[in-house]
Image (cartoon, rainbow, N blue to C red; front, side, top):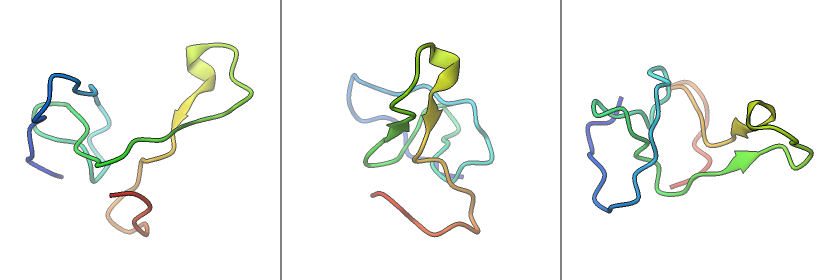
Length: 61
């Protein structure tokens, strides 16, 4: 878990506590965020491609 609070006005809320980018303030601390599923028709069809657990290789910074 990362303890870095958002440093801009454009914070991304996140409730996924097992992601390494999740902060104590329930925001995302990733340097770059990728949201996937180019075929999405509804918000539930999308997913955070930046998500990773501590055991997964790092994708973005």
